[in-house]
Length: 114
Image (tube, rainbow, N blue to C red; front, top):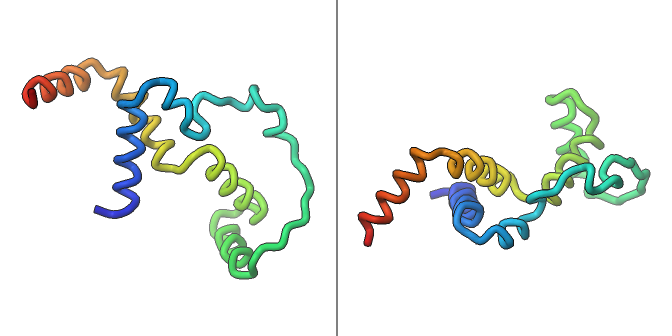
């Protein structure tokens, strides 16, 4: 199993089975842009980054057709709001926990295990 698969499975278990207070501890869980007005304010900064990092984002910029500074901002935002596996696990949890047939199958398996 790959590291990404392991991370996704761990994030899914955490989102599905931990207490609601603990789920809120996952970065980005339950927050919105309206709660943080600074989220949409651009601030000009000077930062020193390694040349290969800038080259990477400039290459990605050409492929995706958006400015490399925007890509760097998106990457930093993803880091702040939680890893992609945690975001995907949260979406999966929302879908699965609202699915009565899924919940019935989980209950049946738990009953079989006991």
